[in-house]
Length: 235
Image (tube, rainbow, N blue to C red; front, side, top):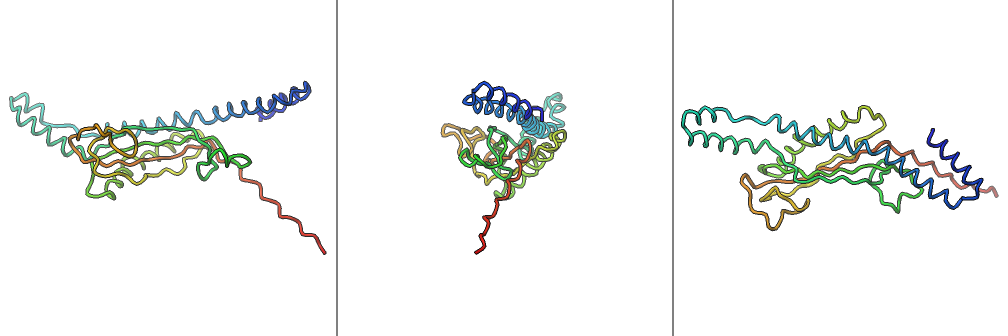
């Protein structure tokens, strides 16, 4: 309300001075600043949620037991074999994030919209998050997707809602795991669709990768006003 009142006061001053040409530009700048102030906390909360989920994965990693005692007793080969056994088993419980991307977009409360559709339609500035998640490939894509949902997507949604507790109007929208790619030889990626052509096969492969995306909205846009039906003239 205070912002709206300030806008009215500035508008009255500019109009009184005959500067109507600069009013639109000034109000447009004020609107951009308002949107930035409204959405910036969402960027921090979205990145913090990803960091929390990934940190939890490392915290829950199992430790190699007995290797230290074997080394101390001079059983180097047995210790090395135990470590390798751990690595081959534990890799099934790990996930990697080669890259993530955040973009500021326009959202109508249902989906992302292009600039051309924004004019005259209720919309808000929002953030689109994309995180590429990779795991050791399972027996099939269904099992690989299931693991990504259980270990990343579901905990992430819970953490995002926790992060937004103090922003009751904010909303997590359309969190989804996209169809992934199987048989990948490396976790070093150029982009979401293919491995680097120069990448060499890594131990522990093949891998499976899928894009996880979601939106964070500061609030839902106002509902569009119903269109008035044309009146029918009585004959």
